[in-house]
Image (cartoon, rainbow, N blue to C red; front, side):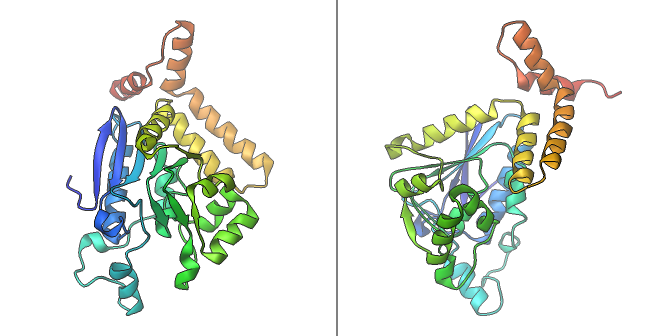
Length: 276
């Protein structure tokens, strides 16, 4: 499948997705959003892919929504670009896609502004290069945060820092983002950013895919849940399904036989077995 705003590369089962509009600092458009949706959805059904990394081409990660292509058209009241195509239609539910996906790691190589930041907040892990910068500057445009970022920023940074980021619209450094918990890790050298992110994605994705999806669902559902009984009920329901999974059975057999588990082989065996 051809893509115009992103590129894809398979690094030993980890799909590297690169935002590829470097001349516009990878500013987000509807076309980019739709291409990201297609690439991630396809990877989720591809058993050769275990996890994904998102990064940016050039010196920026994603400078936010493309003001010329999006905001200007919306301000004029038509909500569309001059050349309307199928790819310019609004993408689907990004947050649900990410939270239901295989492990997702962000490798932030430069500025992550507005939607450039909010699109990665639901990711499982965020790694920043020293030159990365972050801003939820919606207030500067007379707008409010989206993609559930008013929840995810607070979950990552706490109440006070979330208010500061969203009410001032300030831009912060990678070091400060790490200090307040907005990102999970900073590399000392940008040259190691992608390899570090890929290694983290692989460390997650090499685990049983059935359990990975369920853990992500539990984290999503229980993030703000106050009912401990309901939290445990969800966990027990997921455990019951995991106990029946071929990957769990393979983990037990591998432990008893003192060998490395072959989770992919276990999934393939189940897929090829006759249906009862």
